[in-house]
Length: 416
Image (cartoon, rainbow, N blue to C red):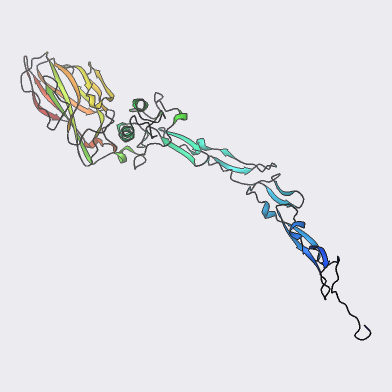
């Protein structure tokens, strides 16, 4: 303008232009007086390279910027080198990578990177040695998820031998689910969803044996109970595990015939009437337990000894109450009934009640005094659900018998 000079007016001006921003497209004149050229920011779409490990942005001066992030490619595998390629994306290559690692298997040691492309971490299975607890009565296995599993199948008090005390700990689990099809339990050796006599038969192959005895039958590994029965509070040592708060008393009663009941509150009285030599005499062994605790007697064994020159030991058998694992081998020539006894799984032998334990038949051979001795058997007495009873707490009383030509009479009890 000849008066005011140059006039630059954009009013009404339209058309394409360039706003100088590399991040915009469709730049056009707005038609305003200032002559503004403005584009639309389409960088969010235009700069997306579809590579997950890059950070996509836009610089108005230069345009799209795709910055690689190697951390975004971390596969948490220490055995790979993790990089972000702006064309191929994440590259996780283990070629040549060495060093220690963790293969996620609790049964292996010395885990290390193999250096292969896949980034393999591999350890050596040392569980056969690492999981060996030195106890022959445990089944030592390894679970890759949790590590060593030392299952005590029969030796529940963990003293490395299988005794009546172990069965006393097993019995409550067996009895509580006897015949019940709805539960699994540590006593379900057959893994058939119930406990029944077949489960006890497994235990019967082990009781009284050393843990390494080849005659012991273990459940098939495929049918193992999922959880071992609870062990005693003390892990090792019979003396530590032995129950000392109760007393077991075994008394010898001599009779003409068997008692009419197998349980009494009061001990039966030995015979007083005359019995001729050569006539069979019934000798009953009666047992009771008293002391602390409500749980009753599970069982045990004793040896009965006589002088075979004075008394003929004809037979010996266990009362039906203790019929599980019943034993009693008679050696007539030596005058011994070995390991007379057995067990009950029910735990219903009440504390303080006299229970008939076993019966023997004897015949007097010579005139004079003869003694019936009792001694500890192979299997210690045990308290139901508690464990082995200390042998110091087991009192055994035999009998002293005077035989005459026509009669015999029990004179007194003889304490061991």
